[in-house]
Length: 59
Image (cartoon, one colour):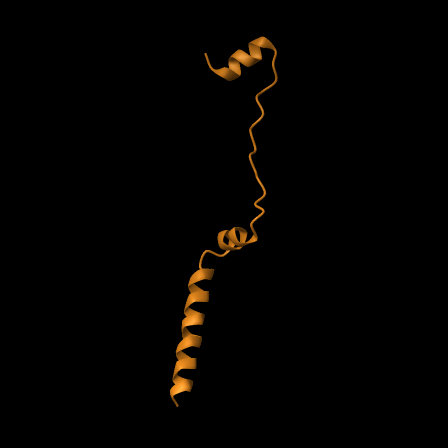
């Protein structure tokens, strides 16, 4: 016998669904979840800046 039928026979209301939504206090993890490609863009841009800086240093 299913739980829904058993609860109905006992006169109990339907079981409420558990909503387990915890707010993350870490802003960095929220940003990384929203934009998963952000570390790659940041890394490539920092590498490009370092290469440009190195070229300008030796000129």
